Amino acid sequence: MTIGKICNREVVYISPDVTVQAACKLMRHYHVGSLVVVEEKNGNRVPVGMLTDRDVVVELLAMDLDAKVITAGDIMSLDLVTVSENHGVYETIELMRLKGVRRMPIVDSENRLTGIVAIDDLLEMLAQELTDISHIVSREQLHERHARK
Image: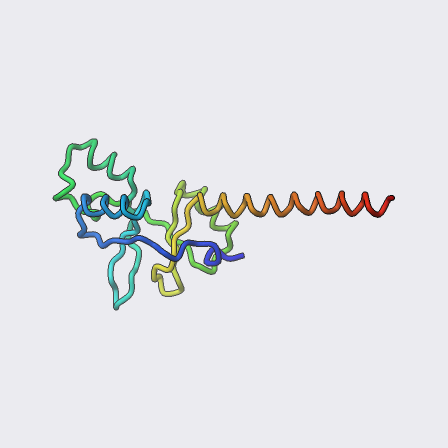
């Protein structure tokens, strides 16, 4: 299964010049802990960074900076890791583990933002797969009981 099949296609994104205060209002409005920072290139949204609630605390609040002046581009995480929507789910999990990230923007073949995947999404998918496997075991036991009567 590809990561594009399970990723969230409704991505909340901002440009680097948005103030941190405005970014935080978006996070609150959409109930998200991160925003993908994008630049417009030839009419396409290309991810260039991530702004997380942790970035706001560590880089802005802890440093007594003004959220009305500082922009997302000033404090966003620059070491952005993206993955192609055609990448496998398990390979994506491994990449997230290696890079130590909880959220990853998904891009198409031209590096355009197409989605986002978070650890929560992956946990939900894996839990469903485990549930499906447990049903196989239960059905096998039921089938055996009926066959051996």
